Amino acid sequence: MTPKVASGIATIALKGPESSAIVLSALQFPAFHGRNGTKVENLVIGRIYYATWALSVPEFNRLATVTEDSQDLTSERLGKEQLVVCRPDSETVEVHCHGGKAICEALLACFERNGASIVSQVDWPDETQGTIEAAAVRALQSASTDQAAALLLAQLNGNLRRELQQVFELCADPSNSKIIECRLAKLCDHAVFGLKLADGWRIVLAGPPNSGKSSLINALLGQQKLIVHPQAGTTRDWTESHAVISGWPVRLTDTAGLRESSDAIEAEGIAKAKHLVEQSDLLLIIVDSLIGWQHEHQQLADSQSNHLVVWNKSDLIEQNGNDQRGIFASAIGIPGIEGLLDAISEAMFSNAPTPNDPVPFTSRQSARLREALEALKQDADLEAARAILAQMLEEEQE
Image (tube, rainbow, N blue to C red; front, side, top):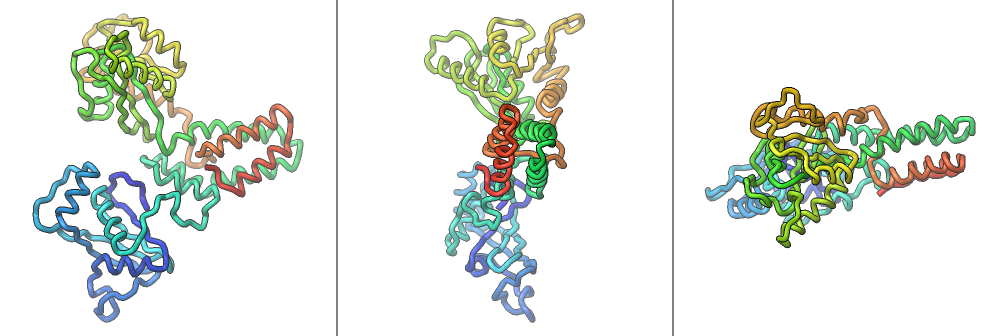
């Protein structure tokens, strides 16, 4: 099934000997789909069908509340949902429907009432189970942008397997050791990027209270999601928002303003903020341009080398002749956040792999490749590296 995110179209798959019967019992198929205008009694392999399905309003509204769908219906019944159904093989039926979360959840519940069992993507029966391709399928289930999905799809289609096979074959000749080391090092570099394709990169905004962290996140998101107030300590805990920058998935993390506080709740939020700074993929140090650089900013810069200094509220100051280094930004005025977006993209994605590159994308793959590379670097152990590559080609990396 497609990932559990809102989309234009979603695909729900049923697998097993009863899959066709369950779909036929749950959906309505217009009579003209049958032979000579008769009722559809069986789904023919390889044929595409049009079907409809209706859901009672109370059940839809209950699911809409659970899935935070803003739509609320009050009429007695919904209009019929239009579906496309196909049966690619004897035990699989695919149902293509509207991608709204409430509709998908309700349709899954309907199939369950008719005899199906809902399983996670990990438990889904797959003939490629135990392979690199199976891992790519599972990662694709979580990919939230087209670019991330394209890179994972390339690995599903064999990019990573082909590279591992070629390096494995090179290991048969000791004279290739330098070439092998170079290619393994490149795979390890790509793995750093590949590990983020499913969950996204964490960008943490940190700084003293009232420096405008929440306002900047709202501007980056293009919506008023976080509470903004001039009172210091408004943000007491961290919040995370999903976004897309340059086509890649990111998680924007707002943190409590860093300062000394006697308030137990605020102090706990500040402690969490410091921990999140350490765990960030990129730290944005937010400076209030009206106040300037403070000792909290220097502490942040010292704690995380991968950071950008953002001079917020720069629309309120005269920038001519300002020799401060960093990015000038404003959540509500000129120069806006375009320069900040460009700086983030340059810092994080300038060396992004292309869809033609082999990209490891699981922690297991990354660990085994580093192990093979270390075997070559430290002990010149070509056989150990070859054995690791053979295992990677044969078994799945969790």
